[in-house]
Length: 80
Image (cartoon, rainbow, N blue to C red; front, side, top):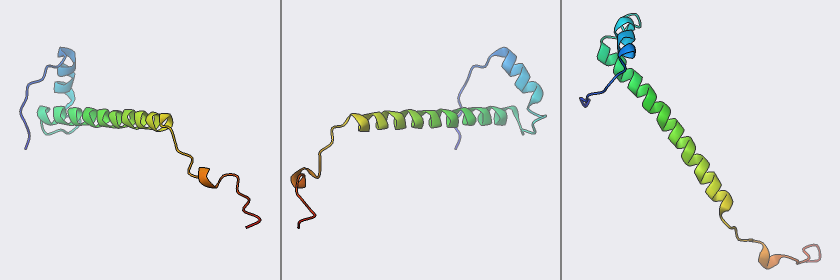
């Protein structure tokens, strides 16, 4: 279900949209707006995921790690 909301659009953009939405075979002006908003939201979601991924990779790099082989370090495995 769609939610109705008001948006403000630059007058020059609005005039352009009114002229070309039929040329691009949109059913209505509203459909053009929905598609444009949907594309921008998807782009922002990708950008946010990338920022989170970068932050997570930086956090992984800063975390101290435990040497798992410390208990057997220095043992001579060839003579076992």
